[in-house]
Length: 202
Image: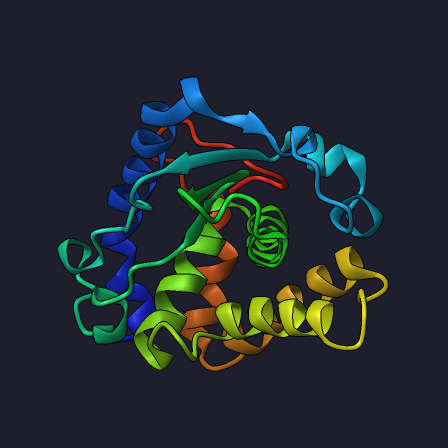
């Protein structure tokens, strides 16, 4: 059986966890645009920065992937991240909220969420986590690559379209791996498990 099909039962559990985690922190979420970052406004449109929320926490929420049947992704079980992105909300460990490179990294994930929609992002991330582990997950590799470019040769130009293009190419490449993957990713946006929205839907 396709790994993607095996992950489908975890999808509603993951969506509920995302919804509950966001609801638990909505009262302390602040707009990213209120933060005094110098480079981000030059790289991302103001509409995006206005919509993205920042939540500073003592310990960054970690998805209970082992409870969702993703326990084989062993690397993830030992990750204690400084940040995590759920839809348009970035959770940052206390002390990391001024780290512009980290926020830039997490903004790459915001764009990935918005490009894929909820179901396809969760499905793709979960599948790649199973196949590659956390550190080599291509969605994480992509975010680290953009972060490295920011810190290396200067601010990368055309950030938003580049992230969208690379995310769509990764989805297409993963879909082509099998007929089952192609059918599953085509159907994922239509599945509904309770209200949880992001662009373009799904």
